[in-house]
Image (cartoon, rainbow, N blue to C red):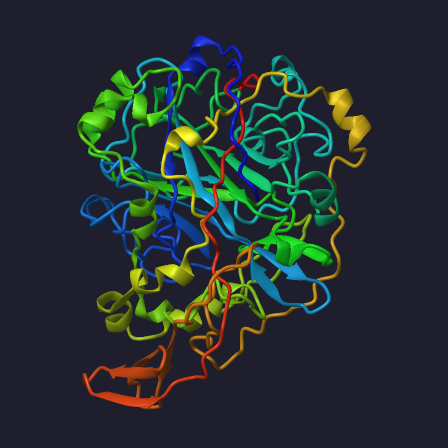
Length: 530
């Protein structure tokens, strides 16, 4: 992707309810791994996530862990929250191999201050948006734009399941054409469509519920919150009358990277979803509640820039892009050998199978239990810092050091393109056409932790060479767990007995490293009625 100097345009008009917000920049990720302390607390998650926020993130992370993290990958150092979504991969239909798709510019987490008496997230609050196993769209025709919001109630499309499906967006990015509205398309377009129409990648969007019943969590991690009847705006249900900050996640994936051009295949999320209907995200607050409430009450500049909030800057300085990119969580030893961003993978992390629906997906049987059968002492007491491999583990692309060089992001473009224009230019609306799945997973595999390959960063541009760093965990018949750390020119094997031996290392090999280039979340202020 090529950065172009931006020209300032007039900001599209917004209603008062959409004016107050700020855009939290989380330019680095803290790691990519099968960890989800909300849904899979204390154990290996079923699929990989790309994580932003506090370095205190982990399999058993709590509010205190996040708040006491040493660093954050977000620009405001007081934001020790954790934000995570499934990672994206490309499945090559010719080879049956997977490659991680580079994430561009990290994540933007919008804090939209909508409704009356907006309340800060209290300590311990967490929630999930979206449905991991959904593989069908049940709110009308997914390949047509949404009906006017004024008709949703008469169409009986204001149930929580309906609103949840409309809270997901897959924005086709072409910076030389009129921008699509946020939450315009509710499924992931196929590669034929993205190759022809999305030269600057796909922007995945997720709106979180903002109506609250006062509980910190719920059994489903969703029912303690609810969407207002227009997804991002409107009235809250009588059961959830308190209004929280409206969170809106944006992540850009470089689906047009050089390594995918000219290849046949499909993009798939780490949970085995090629439809996009199962896209989801998680949030755990790490804010000091009083500090966040003060930000809600005072950071109301319509620019949405965190640099325009005196509370953030006076308690700063704001973290640089480099500082954000350096923040990493400690990788649990039980996951150290599973490199979720290796250049080439023979299967999705965790052996997740692709399930295209329309029936709901099912979890892979036995895969998580296999890995978590390792000693609880290892999984809870021992970890490997991901900071030592930050040059190879981060999929976020370097960005300008000054946020003023980035185009101001803005959820909800107002009348960006007409429905008739879409219908005329893209008759199939980017409809999916899935090839047969070419990979399979066996729950009877005897491997407790899969072997890893080298971990070069995937890049769409040539760059300088560097040495590969990867790790492998081996469990002997007697239950002894050994961690092998591969480096150049030697390998150090550290056992539980703290005995160190040296063995010949693998032959040096050259890999590509992404060259710094400037990226941007290009979209104007305004809204599309949400």
